[in-house]
Length: 274
Ligand SMILES: [Zn+2]
Image (cartoon, rainbow, N blue to C red; front, top):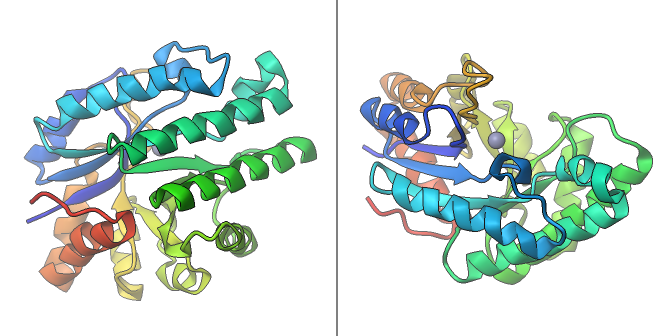
């Protein structure tokens, strides 16, 4: 049986042990997402300097692959506008982020990663930062379109207008809306189907069962953060296997195959090694 966690991080807590726990619980495939530059003690002066972050992430993914099948997602986190902005000013920060996304796109084109990640701040920002963030996001969509890859998004909490706006931006960039994956989604499968972008449902509480009651057009994720200072934050690495097994006991194996294999292959445009 294939059980896929669509969004996890490994940082400084359990590291690869987290994937061993995931595997012991029944997990088989995982999408590992890179973190912000400061997590790697990289201070980028330009977008090109993100390659140090991406290279380190890819090395980790290679090691992770010995445990479960692991795919790299290269992120230019939307909060970089604040982190880098405090150092260089927000305009320069946005410029660096755009260039970094180009580097990420190049890695995907070379087959070193399967997707990029962008978004816009999930916290209150000035109008200026919001505008710049949307420009960075638009640029990310254009890159995903050029490279022909999926793009995960970290955004403000779900709200219909915001998601529709994002879907329109993707459309404008010529990117298929379904290749835009809203990370940390609520289980509103029907709404996402109408909006067009693809939900990666956070596997907390009854979310996975709730999502399945609305359809099978979704992924599941833990957003496991692996931070030793916040060991209980978000969800543990065993959560997705546990929830998918619960799902199977209620709805049967077909839906699990759909969300963990068929949807993944379709949206990312990859073939899962089984
Ligand atoms: Zn995350």
